[in-house]
Image (cartoon, rainbow, N blue to C red; front, side, top):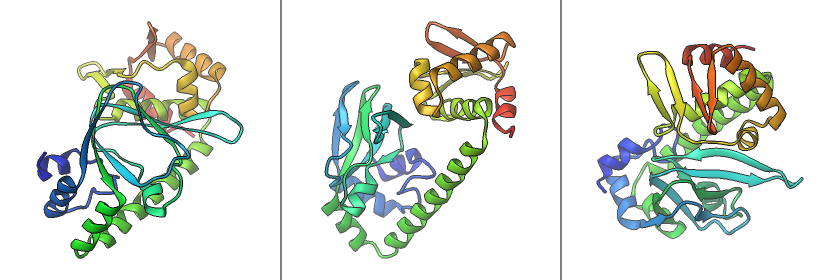
Length: 235
């Protein structure tokens, strides 16, 4: 892989989004390339975090088990996502588990290799700090907004997150129709959005009756994306 290719795939909020070409080349040279089959585990919550992962292709599910035993789906990571950097940086345990949903190709960068790259490139450490500060600001805004939204706007926001991901939508641009790539059960969608299965069922059924979505074979198809955006932005 070339540094330019990696730069294009990196998510805007990722740890390495601001890296320069020579820095990315060094990361690629020092990282290991690994492949994961569907359902295979990339990392486990509670394990030692001695490396980070850069997703090159595929789709992975990021989740954690809370103190009460409930599983919480945090995100669905696609090409360009950087995972595992928190535990790698603070030398603590993994805060979440990651499992491949589709075949995943990833670069795995060890802590020692990461520290060598930072030491070799002047200015990289400050850019990484700015990237982490930007992500913290974004996460705080998401948490604040999610707490303020009622169930309808909350679910709409999470559906849009799935649609807007790089491989997360198959949209008919002519009529505003968009189909979620991931066939989530209502229970798993509830874990992702922080809502009960009953709330998910009630809200989706209501939207289906009004023609906003269709529900068929475990798939959710958005018939009016602009209307969903309006709902997501409603307080």
